[in-house]
Image (cartoon, rainbow, N blue to C red):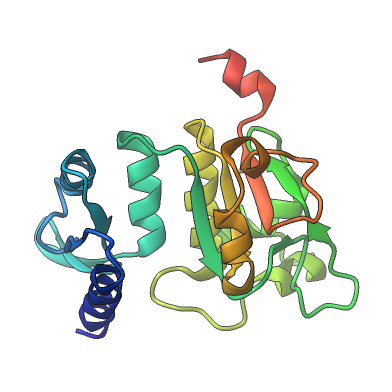
Length: 205
């Protein structure tokens, strides 16, 4: 109920400011969520949805906001995507580590070892690799945390959608970027971490 209440607050605030927002529940539109969002946009509305517990065949499952955005990047007309985290960008290890390095951009079809600790299944992480082990999140959450966020962001980028992973403090700066700047790997100052399909992947389409 908490996410439903928050969604209602956001929608009402947008409407109060003249934005034609409409709430779309993933619980009700699980199988047709992309269609519901697309229809709302076609009608000149701004769809506002949220993560939630949903029916998945004969049981409940957690459908996170990251899952939803990944799905929309696959089946809807999306020009760019922003995944919001509690850290300003993606790092090559636990950002609390003194030698953590910022990752400015990721070409998603590269086998980038800096993301290996996030994108490999837990049982495939080398047990003796302390740096990679430390890069695992210390505090898990029901939506999968940073590991799930990066998988969703990577899959979105594979569909040709430029993606940025950032925190709330950088959100306004990202929203103010035009499409060209948003997808630029040379953007200065950096706004989060950019994930884009590499030229090799793009040429295969």
